[in-house]
Image (cartoon, rainbow, N blue to C red; front, side, top):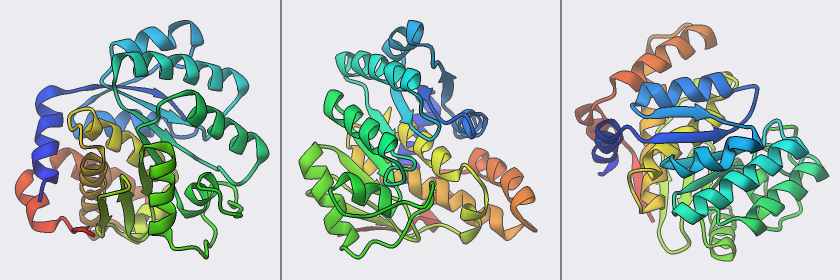
Length: 263
């Protein structure tokens, strides 16, 4: 389909991806951005967050380890990104688990133009107004139709919505993709969700159709997971092999393996 072409654009242009992100996974996010061919920067201080966003090609906001100070920096960076018209990816980690996370996620959505909102099923359902709880940062069962939930959030917030899971859902409201690549081993390593948001930002930095960009980024990410799992004994070797597979991905392999269905 289109994932290989967008990956080539990432590697040709090497976009700078500014992160204000999760302290648990910050190292992994930086590494995955570099491995896929872009350039990471992690600038959390409010004194420089706006300046850094102004020279970046995309901004990732991840609330996994949020504080009031971090949220303030996110708003400063986000307003700078909006002025420059560069994409913002919000990774809604843990929304639905605590009131603080819920309140701050809605603050960011209300005060900034967020282009891509990513989360698991219960995180996105909470943002879309469903009565759900998230178990820490792990998804809980959502009774509602997830595609309908994703479309609702996209229409309400004028954004692309990404729900990660066994099959990833990506929608801008009108156009919807299912990404059917992936491996269960991806769920055995802390941080793969955060890393996926970083990869999505890399693709959104070079492709203005953000639904297509997010789908392509997830397909490449998940294909690397499939390839890494084939030669891994457990989470430790998987993580090492995963970085190698992301680094070595090529268009021929992606064209052969990608499983993206347009609904």
